[in-house]
Length: 330
Image: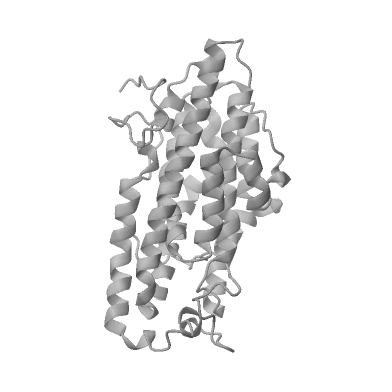
């Protein structure tokens, strides 16, 4: 369908009608539910010393049961029926949140694909988009190291794979570096060097209010429950396909960049989503009392992620205004 949303209000949370042109790139928005871990086992997020259940980890505990059960809930594992029910409910609840907040339904992606070439290739625009998107992705990659309830040897072994997928690629490469190269190869004038993406406290000073809120909230929520990790991993394949599709309208070879190609060819985001759900189900089976917080934090994370796409839409609006009024500064 022809898009005519260049001037759509940037505060709209959903477009009236979703575009169907996909520039030959299959989207992952209809990802099948995957309650079990991916073949070979995948690593969930990271240790969070002192960030387990509020009562803390039982002294000397080094197995999953001890990690998952806080000292303030010693009888939590004695209700297997409740644990099984909580674990069984997780997938459908997360899928429902993901459907309600599907990134590819946000106006930003359609508007990006429909930009006139002289605006879409503007180095300043591309650099500003890189800053917002990289900051949001950086926040999740850093926060995954502090996930709670995953300190046992078995869980540490599984979560190591996610660290490798993000930060331990061959030749010392990382997803962060891959993303920056992809944007610079399109001609982006990136306002921040890679190593300037550090702590959340330092990074927010370079960001708009919505993206800064996402970065700050990610640090808090990822350390509190596994819900934010689950929802981000579940939606990531959808937004990566949507972004690649929109950029490919102007830069057809963008899909060959390793940031996109490696993830799509190897199904990285789907595997991460399946593992996040599987690991969280194991935790909930022993700690059903964590379900409400897990779901509440997943919803809060999804709301904040909507704000990132709104912020990127605002970048488009500002670029359009600059091109229509060359005398504008700022």
